Image (cartoon, helix red, strand yellow):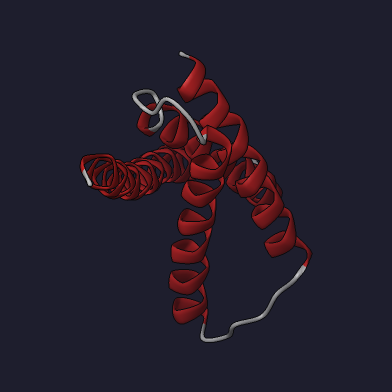
Length: 130
């Protein structure tokens, strides 16, 4: 019975850490996008860099968020990291689709989803092994 309660507590704790990692990732993304928008406004950086920089910011944000949130987890860093990436990308996809008014899936969306999964995986591995 005690072992079962420990497992439930551990799983509840993992869910909190996964959500925490996703929130950290979103906050990092917002900060990075504000900085990038300022650079676009006040420098001669081309607007053609927006898709590439957006993907890079997404991947780095998820990598940092999943790594930080998984640093106290002893196992399942890969799965937890993937979940951080998937929750992050689901929130971002839903928000951007509502703002744009369409729920289309294009090449950029697919690249971001794959990047989110890979970044979450790597971040989870790094976090568990720190």
